[in-house]
Length: 197
Image 1: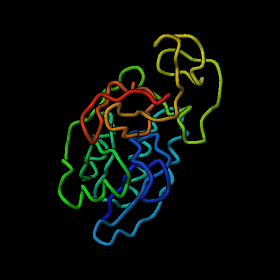
Image 2: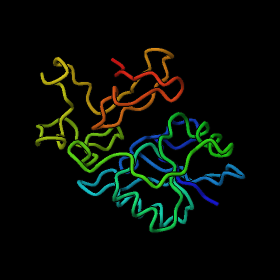
Image 3: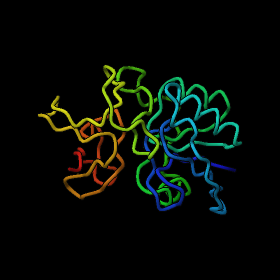
């Protein structure tokens, strides 16, 4: 059995990246032996359709299940059509999430966790080191800039990288482009997250 976990880096101590299509890589791991390979996510630099491309890539890798933070409906459909089990809402290190899976604490789902609306577009500008850099915005949810200008949120725009932090227990999770930190709750204590400044 092999599981693909969306990751922000290439080892078991890296954080799960909640953005399936835009993650830096996938840790493809055998939960029985904990032997793993790193599958670079070539879809993360795509101008559109990153989630579908990433789904096709993990299906081609022969995995049996996917563990990630959030999925769009069309990506969920691709994974389920290939017969993969899908586990959503994962947060923490790859090692922590693998332990949760081994202990049966992750819930399998068939429901997508996000819609296809504005702000769920391409991965450009994510903190993968492969983004488009600073530039001029291109409209709602599709901007390529780093968010340094005055705008909503009282003029504070933290850009695509960084972390969401729990004001209660100080748990940090990678920020996901297009999803304000206050829309997430802490995976440890359930408190509403804030943006780390």
